[in-house]
Length: 140
Image 1 (cartoon, rainbow, N blue to C red):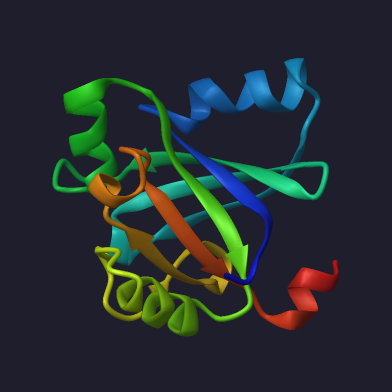
Image 2 (tube, one colour; image 1 turned 180 degrees about the vertical axis):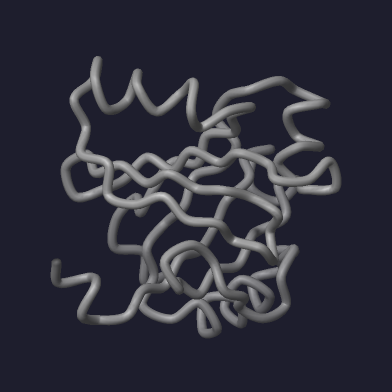
């Protein structure tokens, strides 16, 4: 598997406005961006920490997967994302190894990344994301 590092840890939150100050002002992490990902019905705040990131996910709709996760389990860690060279190649590799995928093909995630999720029942009940970035972004 071509996993190079933990790309980010996704944290489900009810409100970016209420949560950002802890990460920015208390932990003193650099706020990289805030964006909406309409296809996922979320607003995302991304923070740098070492060569990884923390992703805060706020639902923008009650039908959002994040809204449903908060309703079921409350706020907190939602997923761990691993950086990969090719999300499509890793999906194929995982399927060949008998691993169930939520996504049969990569989809667009925050920052224009190509992402795919592994079914949590095949990853120790941890929602696992494969995350591919453009080469230029990886070098920054």
